[in-house]
Length: 97
Image (cartoon, rainbow, N blue to C red):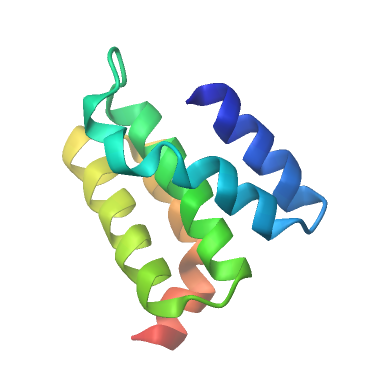
Protein backbone atom coordinates (compact mmCIF):
# COMPACT_ATOMS: atom_id res chain seq x y z
CA UNK A 1 0.00 0.00 0.00
CA UNK A 2 2.80 2.42 0.84
CA UNK A 3 4.56 1.72 -2.46
CA UNK A 4 1.27 2.20 -4.29
CA UNK A 5 0.78 5.54 -2.54
CA UNK A 6 4.30 6.62 -3.45
CA UNK A 7 3.71 5.68 -7.08
CA UNK A 8 0.37 7.52 -7.05
CA UNK A 9 2.13 10.64 -5.74
CA UNK A 10 4.59 10.31 -8.61
CA UNK A 11 1.72 9.99 -11.08
CA UNK A 12 0.07 13.09 -9.63
CA UNK A 13 3.32 15.03 -9.98
CA UNK A 14 3.26 14.11 -13.68
CA UNK A 15 -0.42 15.11 -14.11
CA UNK A 16 -1.47 11.49 -14.56
CA UNK A 17 -4.49 11.46 -12.24
CA UNK A 18 -6.04 8.50 -14.05
CA UNK A 19 -3.10 6.21 -13.24
CA UNK A 20 -2.95 7.48 -9.65
CA UNK A 21 -6.64 6.69 -9.22
CA UNK A 22 -6.20 3.20 -10.69
CA UNK A 23 -3.39 2.42 -8.26
CA UNK A 24 -5.07 3.85 -5.17
CA UNK A 25 -8.50 2.38 -5.87
CA UNK A 26 -7.03 -1.11 -5.42
CA UNK A 27 -6.34 -0.40 -1.75
CA UNK A 28 -9.32 1.79 -0.85
CA UNK A 29 -11.89 -0.98 -0.18
CA UNK A 30 -9.58 -2.83 2.22
CA UNK A 31 -7.73 0.08 3.81
CA UNK A 32 -9.02 -0.78 7.29
CA UNK A 33 -8.00 -4.43 6.91
CA UNK A 34 -4.37 -4.01 5.83
CA UNK A 35 -2.11 -5.54 8.50
CA UNK A 36 0.17 -3.12 10.35
CA UNK A 37 -1.53 -0.12 8.75
CA UNK A 38 -1.70 2.50 11.46
CA UNK A 39 -3.51 5.80 11.63
CA UNK A 40 -0.59 7.72 10.14
CA UNK A 41 -0.48 5.42 7.11
CA UNK A 42 -4.24 5.78 6.63
CA UNK A 43 -4.04 9.57 6.86
CA UNK A 44 -1.19 9.67 4.32
CA UNK A 45 -3.15 7.40 1.99
CA UNK A 46 -6.30 9.53 2.33
CA UNK A 47 -4.29 12.69 1.64
CA UNK A 48 -3.08 11.20 -1.63
CA UNK A 49 -6.56 9.93 -2.49
CA UNK A 50 -7.95 13.42 -1.81
CA UNK A 51 -5.35 14.99 -4.11
CA UNK A 52 -6.37 12.54 -6.83
CA UNK A 53 -10.07 13.30 -6.41
CA UNK A 54 -9.38 17.04 -6.40
CA UNK A 55 -7.32 16.77 -9.59
CA UNK A 56 -10.20 14.95 -11.25
CA UNK A 57 -12.78 17.47 -10.06
CA UNK A 58 -14.76 15.02 -7.93
CA UNK A 59 -15.63 17.60 -5.30
CA UNK A 60 -18.15 15.68 -3.19
CA UNK A 61 -15.90 12.64 -2.80
CA UNK A 62 -12.90 14.93 -2.28
CA UNK A 63 -14.66 16.86 0.49
CA UNK A 64 -15.64 13.64 2.29
CA UNK A 65 -12.12 12.22 1.98
CA UNK A 66 -10.45 15.36 3.29
CA UNK A 67 -12.91 15.41 6.17
CA UNK A 68 -12.11 11.77 7.00
CA UNK A 69 -8.36 12.40 6.86
CA UNK A 70 -8.64 15.52 8.99
CA UNK A 71 -10.79 13.77 11.59
CA UNK A 72 -8.43 10.79 11.79
CA UNK A 73 -5.41 13.05 12.14
CA UNK A 74 -7.04 15.22 14.81
CA UNK A 75 -8.27 12.23 16.84
CA UNK A 76 -4.80 10.66 16.75
CA UNK A 77 -3.08 13.91 17.69
CA UNK A 78 -1.12 14.08 14.44
CA UNK A 79 -0.59 17.85 14.47
CA UNK A 80 1.82 17.81 11.52
CA UNK A 81 -0.69 15.94 9.37
CA UNK A 82 -3.53 18.26 10.38
CA UNK A 83 -1.38 21.22 9.35
CA UNK A 84 -0.42 19.53 6.08
CA UNK A 85 -4.05 18.78 5.20
CA UNK A 86 -5.08 22.34 5.97
CA UNK A 87 -2.17 23.65 3.91
CA UNK A 88 -2.87 21.38 0.92
CA UNK A 89 -6.63 21.69 0.88
CA UNK A 90 -7.47 24.75 2.97
CA UNK A 91 -8.25 27.07 0.05
CA UNK A 92 -10.64 24.60 -1.53
CA UNK A 93 -12.14 23.64 1.83
CA UNK A 94 -13.05 27.26 2.45
CA UNK A 95 -14.60 27.69 -1.00
CA UNK A 96 -16.54 24.41 -0.65
CA UNK A 97 -18.06 25.43 2.69
